[in-house]
Image (tube, rainbow, N blue to C red; front, side):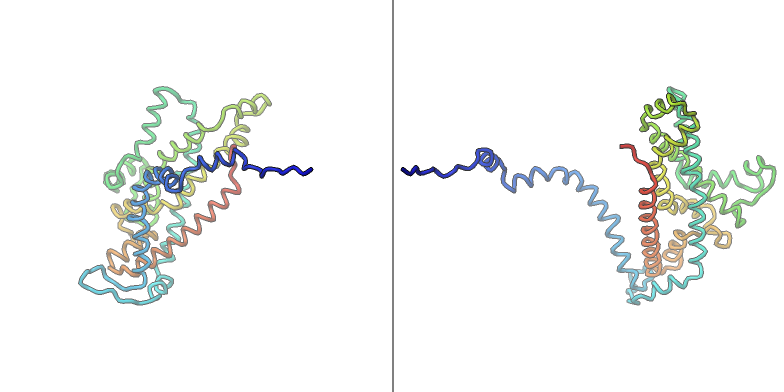
Length: 315
């Protein structure tokens, strides 16, 4: 006697999932709102960053003096060859590297020390302290340059009166470089202190409490617990100094020294501006700008890789 078996029906779970799955168009509409929120920012990024970058790449293969009545003359790779042979390029690059190195104490070392020494300040005193520290960041660079031009005056300046030795800060090679670095560091210090303070606030106090129970001193806690946990913040400040030093120093150089005396304060960024808007050689300036862009991009990638290996992240 044979019994005929009925075919197995599909599991009810799969049937329910297939019936409940919305069509593709509805799923796309549901996923669209986050991208609509990002659309204005992405549009500005394309218009103000990527589009000029593409135009700079195109312009680097031409010779043009920025006049709309003059045509662009194609020159191929001549602009890039000329960039390599520029006599001022080596000096400006060394000056840019030196500026970055001397700005690191203002953006990393001093903010860390100040934040560690003053992190116990709370209440109104803490608010007043943070306002005073952050105040230089709010001063426009041009207004700051006018103020420091008066303070550094060799005859009646307050700085020379305080040190008791007349120094022509803005018209001598060594003092001019120190003045640009010092004023830029003064602008940068307040922002960096707030960033380090925020990084310290995100460190769990239970680590320090556990170390104190084990008999660790305050110096040992700072060295082996706080600073390693603060390393991602310090990495951020280091990258910001390397990548944004040109934007921070440019308005001060243009307002105080105009690259002088004798090109003593002409860094790579100010050199690009001179080639484009003083020599009216837009093609050469575009080629030099792209070369610097690639160089600093490689430096940034190397620093990110290096600090990712060395920094400590709290999970």
